[in-house]
Image 1 (cartoon, rainbow, N blue to C red):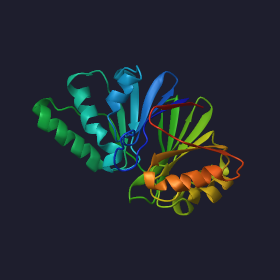
Image 2: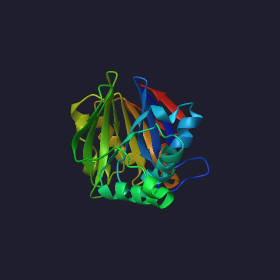
Image 3: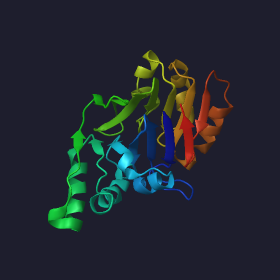
Length: 239
């Protein structure tokens, strides 16, 4: 499994960071976790044809996680017409908004995309990638995702309230090859006692807010039995 971190910023883009978007490669297929930035642009820059995109998984409906979907579905309507990803969202209003946008542009030719409004539990399994959604408290409809593919397991926390409140406890019970944790809504050091409990040795900081940099540095300086890597746009990780 390979992970391409194309957008690693917090609620707004920074000069060197797009808003949240990660592309997952497994078994010759591609999947996206959130689309706060221009997803199609990211795929093309990676040399990935959009037709290879099997599914898009949205952690929650905030603009920095979904704004890129408007341009994405636009291009899939008039140009990449054979691209047909399955969109997974925790709220119907995202689909309604996308269709309204598409209708404004194309009228009767507006395209309906394959979609699922999901709840907690297993939401996807195509024989290559399995995705479990785990509810968090960032919003009334926000989720973490546990991804399993090619014998590997990776957790994306999505946005959290605080680690001690809604960090997915499945990581205390099941081994993970990597955990990708947001770093916008609380100091990075809040993760320290949580990471100690996890059955994982490799942690990656994502969704980074510059005001958290001092706490990131403090976490990196701690003596710990695991590694912590702050992510940057364009970072490629093979699990």
